[in-house]
Image (cartoon, rainbow, N blue to C red):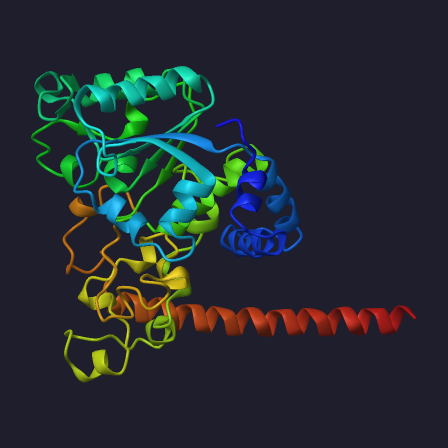
Length: 350
């Protein structure tokens, strides 16, 4: 843990050029200017491996599956080069008392410096008995582990917003991590599952610059959650023209028309799926023919079902488009008239 990351990379034959290439990739993901790549490379080289304790509570392991199937950076890059993953319920080889001893040892050795990553919500119903680890309720283990942590990263929608366990009728009394952690910065990286690039980019930013990335109102990294799926969707032109698929196998769907009427939640969902895509940049749900289900938003499961359209129907959408077009034309005509009057006044004065 005392070794600088740059020294470790050099010992493994990773050149400065390769580190710069990696930093350029990461800064582009984080929407940082190109000049930040050198600063990130220098920051990473001078960083020490970040101690990370990963807790898994009410979850399906999909968040870990997403991370282990990332392509660039790979899981090996993230674990062996950039972090010291001292505890992880799914990936650790130790079990029982040895596993819990490793968690507490990391907390002691890295007091005030370690990062806690959590996937899954925390059940509070009936004293928290619905999910227990090593004789502790999830709530008790979370409180103990975050006490001396530097920051907490809630990975996946269950941890960030409660997710499926919190959906009605919420029989276990599930709550998101932010409801239980106070006095510590909490970063939310939602998604069901979350995008591995968002996880890797957040860790790289903390290591390089010693601070959290810019966050939105829901504590999500703005670089990955700053724009809606709709804003970047390649089907957006069809939406603007009022061309909507009526079923998943009709002619409109085959021609790539908008999936809004089939329940796509892209207009109200903020994530980087449309730009980063999945499986090494191969595709994302809408490109594969399925509407966005809004999984990176709070209470997405209770927002009306996967195939129920948003409250504004497509007839209203077309009206809005028509009104916007008329308003735009009127605004343009008014601006032109104002410009002509100003030009005439200037000529008269001269």
